[in-house]
Amino acid sequence: MEDWRWTADLIDSNTRKWKTDLIINTFEEREAERILCIPLPLCSFEDFVVWNGEPTGEYSRIMGSANCRRCQTEAETREHLFRDCPVAKDTWERLAIAWPNLAANMDFSEVLKKIFEANSLGICRKFVCALWGIWTARNKFLHEGKMQTGSQIVDFFVKYMRELDGTKRFLPESSFHRNRWIAPSGSRLKINFDAAFNRQRKESCTGLIVRNGNSEVICSRSIINKNIPSAFAAEALACYQALELGVQLGLRDVEVEGDSQTVIRKLQEENEDRSEIATYIADSKKMTFLFISCVFLFQNREANEEAQK
Image (cartoon, rainbow, N blue to C red; front, side, top):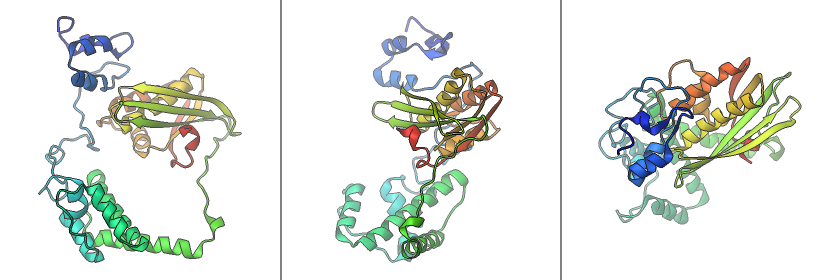
């Protein structure tokens, strides 16, 4: 502890990177790993509080609790979320789908395996769609504040099942089409980015590809990143690295496109971000001033496949 007194002493002021050797030699392995996974901004500024996973940036009692965000009665385990929560129970009852009576200590994944092995393809399809409906409703409550009842989840389930059946019955195979990458117009260039994340190793791999209006590849690059805390951080860093590549190539008019809707939305918003990826978002926004024009676009994963290779 003799080589530092303040957090600033752990940061190289020239490179704006952590002093890795000092941190590893000073702290226990787990603590050092956590410190090194904290992203540092390009420019120093006054510290502010961020909340992991809180979309509004505001702290709430619910966010600080391990209990289910909707009913606040039990821990939000997979069993509770999909089976025991009052909203989930109501959903299953309305669908007339009963969970089997299995050993209480059986892992949730094993329970699902037993269900799929014991039922027909049709029943399994209904079961999976119901699970998806419950999960979607949970996320809507978390990120949008919209509370859905079991009845509303069932309505979603019924409409979705009808759409699946109608698509299968009436549309020929040739009518299904893949979403394709759209070339930029004029002299503008498009940079597509994507990221793969290894949670155990805390590493990510960024894939970048730059193309012109004729769909010709101008440049492509892969980058290995260490000390990455989450998949969200991996995507946000990949977007920043896409901008960095654009600057290195001397591009002036660009579109930056990725399949992370959360990252793209945060970059399109004007308000200050206070999520776990706030540093990457702030640095990316500052980087846009180095271009004459910079537009952020969301594209689904299928159309973004070149950046994934």
